[in-house]
Image 1 (cartoon, helix red, strand yellow):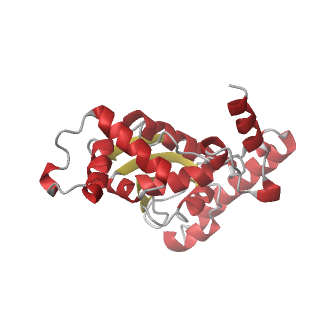
Image 2 (cartoon, helix red, strand yellow):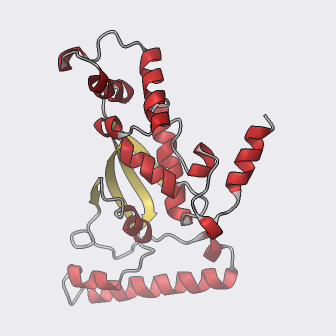
Length: 228
């Protein structure tokens, strides 16, 4: 899996701070960024996040190039609807020798791995034969969820907070969790104050909302905070 942050709002933290400032200031829009030091920007963002005032975060957006992931992952990703996506088309791009993603549980079992690999090879052969007699857009119906795909995804900071809260959780499916962790790592490089509390609620609040499905990590986090 490869994740690269290829574009983002210039000085995203200052943009969010300026957007927040207009809510509480009589200044004109053109003056919003004046006299805002880096310390003031960080302090204002910290207050916004602690209060749950996330709407100013919608003014900062981040664009990722993602590859080496499965169609299974992309089907999960597009459920996050406040975002923009551009994905490799199986209608226009041939998949004659498609790459595929193998789950770790399959790789760990020799028998399962051999079966998985054989089925993928059979599907590759069937696809190559079928694409010779029907349109590619129809031959793609043979392709499995495991097929590797590439996409570009853009989300604003508020949507990313929601994404990280859900998908960095230990109970999230393994592949999209890996993606979320990599995306969080990328945005923290360019906007550390903005994403300092981005993640599952067990990390950020010491609370888990998964009920009986909880992995128990919230208790570990609370215990660690108490013992500091």
